Length: 326
Image 1 (tube, one colour):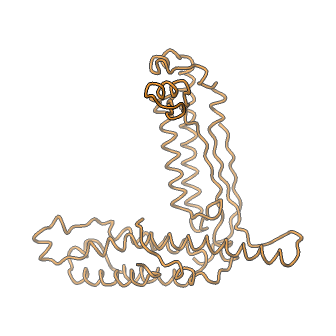
Image 2 (cartoon, rainbow, N blue to C red; image 1 turned 180 degrees about the vertical axis):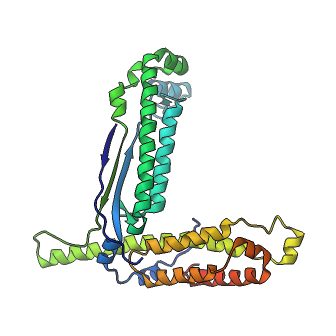
Image 3 (cartoon, helix red, strand yellow; image 1 turned 90 degrees about the vertical axis):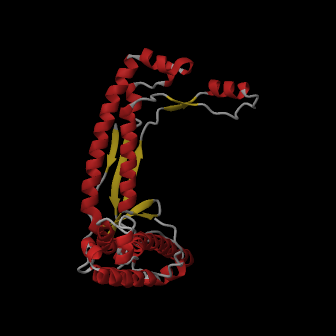
């Protein structure tokens, strides 16, 4: 198995879905003036790629036979064989790969060809993803051992594949080992430092393109975090919309879990971590969330009708204050 692991020294941190309509113009106003230096000092870029063997092969002969048997033209049907259909070891690798990719997606934000990682998340991200890749390495080793057994017992594969079995479609162990690799690297955010010789017109055009590139990425990041916040806010607003009399008649209908509050508490840290531009509106939204949740617990909301009404009112106010939610 090959790995390409890199890490760079990160800068010191600065200060710290549902489908809804977000008015992009409102988000653009919030980021009309972006200091790329601020972003570069508060985040880094992550370059991550995972390669793995799928153990799947198209069978041209079987595909042609299916087309012929159904009076169809050649090329209409495709028969793809799973060479190791019951390999739990290979499935475990694929499942772990999905876990790593989802984790990376949740902890970072799209930024061109890479992902933007807030510096405040770096240590947790690096620790957890390193542990995940260590587990991934172990799973690959387990699979390679099982694959070596399969190569030594091809008759077992032939029994399962029947007439679809072709021993030439099973690569040697070293070739399969080379199909598993990953790359993980951290890099600084570019700051529009053009070290090339060009005339003023070309330089101006490149700077404008870079400015648009940064603004579009920040716009996408802000849109995503506001949507992430909106989901638990709307859920809380809906769950708190009842009276004691209604709950007495249908207690199971008007019940909620402790995560109703916990999910919003988690968003307090998230809003601080992702504010790599020191955006005042995002910071104000976070402070409003902190004040709204001060002294609020799930048990308190269940037992206190006044607290429930006041919290719902504040939640609705916060929803209405988010950038032009429709």
